[in-house]
Length: 182
Ligand SMILES: [Zn+2]
Image 1: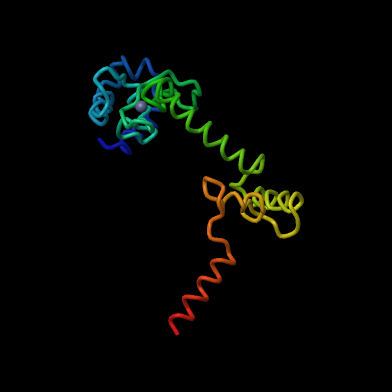
Image 2: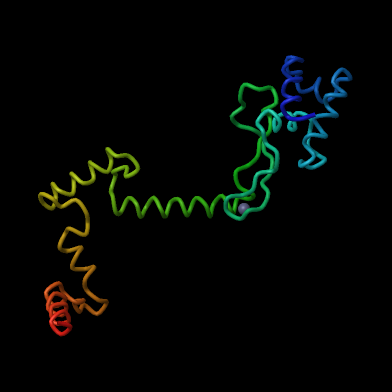
């Protein structure tokens, strides 16, 4: 049976309660079908958890976003509407991966905050507010860190404090090149 067929059947049977589905004689055949359709799960997995996977269109064990290993099962804290929601998959394969991922998020958030303050740059409103607060602080038309002289100077200076080719020098050089060519 396909997932859709099993879903249909479960609905027809008015979603048998977990004990009935797991142990009831009446659902022996349906249970068999549920097991066959979810062979990607380990042998320990219960009919109820398999039904959960079917109802949520999960056709393979999800992988850890940090390391790519298969994730584990856990008790479902946000029990949904379905009677089969007792267990779900963890997001990460291990506490270690969860922590690493959180650190990455924290670091990214910290650097975004350092650059943009409390403005939510993902929204147009946040971007507008960021530009406005910049203009208020540094003057009309200054809407980006590169516009601010102190930032710009820093960007134009080499590590030992020497100026990179300045605009004037650059213009002069270019003029020279053009004149030499003609
Ligand atoms: Zn992992």
